[in-house]
Image (cartoon, rainbow, N blue to C red; front, top):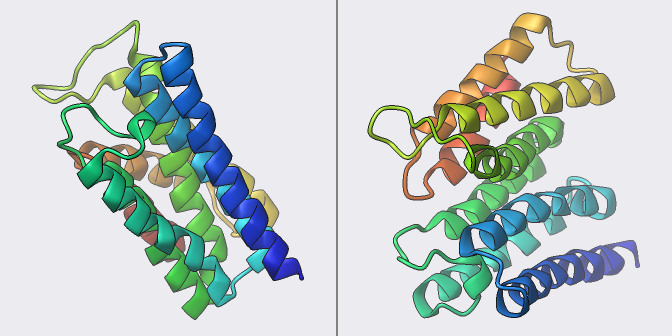
Length: 213
């Protein structure tokens, strides 16, 4: 019964996010970038629902796996306007679900990987999601890229806070040097990802580094 409830709550939560952001865009004229990033941030919190109900069982893989296909269809057909870029160049939403799925699979095969899975996806969801909001009024770009110093600062701060929280909760024995290493790594991994590819480089790379240190 707990597993069934987990599926119901997970999918209900994700559907409510999509419906809510669609309403914000259509009825209240929210910008495309705003609704996209709201989805980016809020979907990350589904990790807590899945971990609570599924823990490290195979069920952890199913919800993000289904959204790989849903997001792909949306990317090709423009089904969910609130989470797609108008120019349709970025496969970021597909990569987002793919990284969730890969880390869930690793956690299923190696249950001790659970906290590193959380560090990776939550830094992606919150850090990469918050970064554009921090850059709205101060867009000092890094070189010829669309990345900004303020956005990177946001990612650094989020990665730092999340690693501290997870260290305290899961007793990972991190040191201050470890925190700084993870925060800087998050900035680099986000920076090297273009056209949505940072939704793979950031969570997968950071989770691996968090595990190795």
